Length: 283
Ligand SMILES: Nc1ncnc2c1ncn2[C@@H]1O[C@H](COP(=O)(O)OP(=O)(O)OP(=O)(O)O)[C@@H](O)[C@H]1O
Image (cartoon, rainbow, N blue to C red; front, side):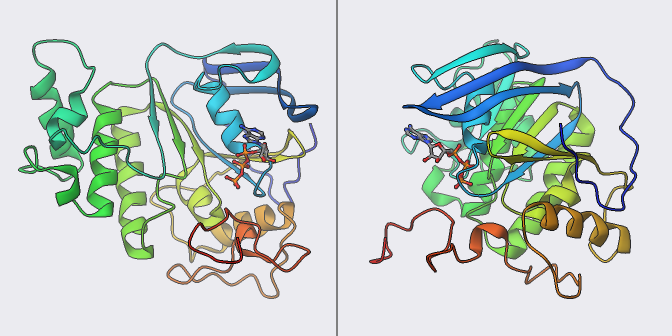
């Protein structure tokens, strides 16, 4: 595995028992291999972020680990823990269920509602148990989705751009909340993101997927909570941006107005590489 760690010599964290292990994982669409034999081990309680250019296969890998890719051609071995929770860009709350009923949907046990209410309190939604999803703001809906993930006491949390649709300030608050919940519950986390700052702020390990392979595997050896103004934070950030093919003129960081992320940059044809916008007449 090629590892571009720039000048950083962060040690790998202590070896832990594996929560997830993939061996020569291949996933293909038609005759195109999107994942080309991924060997990856995520330790129990390890927080890993997965970066990569748009279309590099991040969601494909996450869906494979979630076993949500039935019918997709592929090969390789995959070991995942029993209790896995998922979180996506949209909260996926069912509009016809109240918030608490959404959180505990499918949760067994007579104390399910009690546990659901506790999870809602943990994410700051105490008193909103009987609200309908549409009565919550976008950030609150994502909090409810986190409560839904938590109540299952996951050994592994898989999150695909969970904060991608939130405004910058709400996103910063959600980062704090996610890191706090992680430190309290310690599931293994695999967070797919386009946001290099988010990855360095939250994760203890950052992977970059490129051409169907893990091109970078970088341990982030910074104390938490992390400051984006810490020069070492910027060093990690610049290293990862460089690995993604983005070179900063001065390496400065602006947490409220982050520099363009790789997905925001123009594609060779001049159009941004990020997801097509259904409201954009050019798409
Ligand atoms: N169901 C599908 N059928 C055909 N091709 C697919 C399918 N799902 C994904 N792909 C292709 O696989 C590649 C990887 O897609 P994937 O969604 O995993 O990328 P990504 O890195 O998550 O992208 P993004 O950052 O834009 O969300 C893309 O080229 C995509 O077009």
